[in-house]
Amino acid sequence: MTTTASQPAPADARRPRKRRNRPMLGAVLLAIGAVLTVAALGLLAFTVLGLAVLQSDVLARIEANNLSYYAEFGFVRREISSLTAMLAIPGILLVTAMSCLIPGYLLRRATVRSVPTTFWRGGSVLATYRPLAFWAHALWCLVPLAVWAALILLPLRSMIAGDFPAGIPDDNMTAVWLGLGSYGAVAAGVFGVMVTSLVKKAVYVRIATDHPDKIARGGRGIWRWITFRWRFDLWIAGVGAAFLGAGVIALGFEDLPFYLSTLAIGGVFFIGGMLLSLNYWRAGEPLGSGESYS
Image (cartoon, rainbow, N blue to C red; front, side):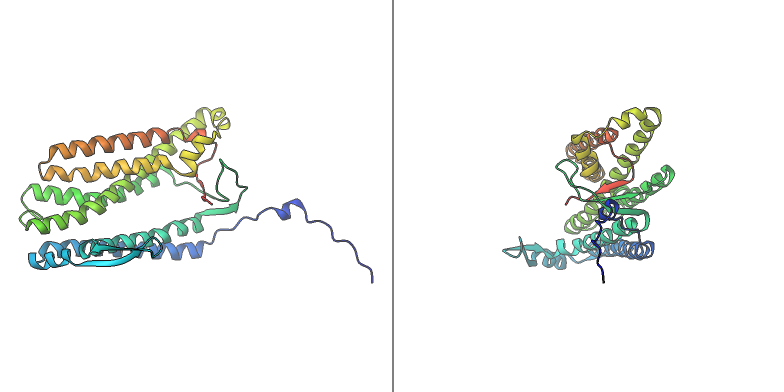
């Protein structure tokens, strides 16, 4: 019996393989995320309406009752009011929904592969996917805008006109607007992120079409770090939009100085994030890609 020396594997065999997308699993995760999102919005509406009709003494007992929990890996004991905990439950459902929607979307539309890690390039996992068409992107922007209108704009107009939530006790009013304002700010922030992303895409496509040589000269570390790896442009614009969306509540209480303060802060953040997003072409990366931190 003779033996032969094993030949080294070809270079292509040693390269990290692409992980194929799994559309069926992605569809399941998207469905779970959608159900959790609807459940969270329904629970939020039920909670807000319940807080509006609670007797004052019952609401006072809820606010006075604190729940204990351990933070910082269990080393620090903290307390949270029962009212805050009630309003946080829809948020927990939304975070869980996001944990299903994002990987579900990537499993259906993306291809994930390993890439070398360096200081500036960062993550070791790169996902590439087909970007949404402009019209679809614009239509999706209307979803968080509609949620913001339902949570803040419509109740605010109703209150100014003397209808609900006007006329309920002050403590109930505070609890109602705490819930509406918190989640309305999140909806406004998501809307700001999506609008900034749409502008970011439009500017990139315009430059890539008219001046492809500029795209080829991209790849500058700082712009890749800001606009691609961490998406700081979108985070900053989202924070600004949250300030702008929640600040209008002050108009219902005739607090013009507070409204102008939130308008100035939100405007600076939103415009700053938008200006950063216009420089995505300098990152040297195509549309429809993202990488992990680790």
